[in-house]
Image: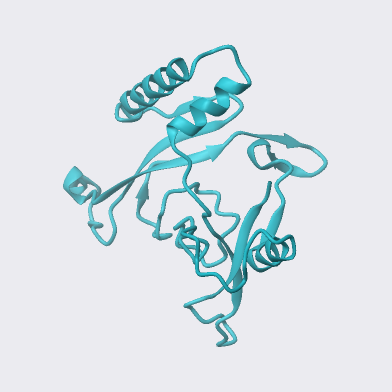
Length: 189
């Protein structure tokens, strides 16, 4: 189990004028609710239908709380919060602020973490994570005869459909998977 990355050249030049390469995480596939329910069923005493029902009801309950200006904390997992963006819709006076300025809502996820006096912040959700380059993974598959190097793409999407964080580094974005642009007009959080 590893997070797969590929090198991507930044579209923005650094202070020295160079467009440098950074690792960008890529998404190999999307796992649906049925797959998750089947996996949970294999390690518990509940049916796939029960798991599906609980997760569906959890999503409905979370939506209700999030849209009532509450954060939702799932112990051992993390906290979800709705963030509003008002890109380039700022006003000069505080009393002129209104809801029509909000042009985008995103859900920010902050993984649960523990702090240690020795090392600072340790994120539980990311504990034990390893990284592997796409090139190394493809070479390993070819060496083991799993992939024919002359065959066409088998339909997986390692070509760059990444997490969409907008961050050219691809890793370490504490804002969660918001798909944000890094603007400073976020409200909340």
